[in-house]
Image (cartoon, rainbow, N blue to C red):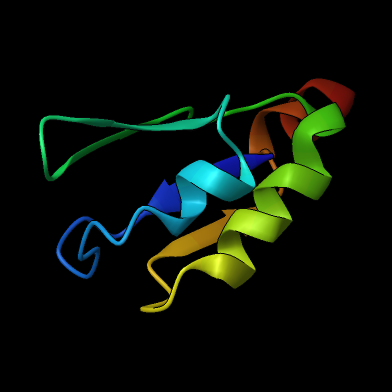
Length: 71
């Protein structure tokens, strides 16, 4: 899975930190750091973070690299 945060839209409300603390962190007051390709086992936490974001800055998509390996 691929996680993308639109850092222009993100307002540092930090709701993602509470939903998925192992995958999102704030450095300083506003610099969001996140794991762009977490394991599939983290999907439930990541989905909670997506839904918790009040400005909908987080998106999740399938990881395209696994599709290329199967071909």
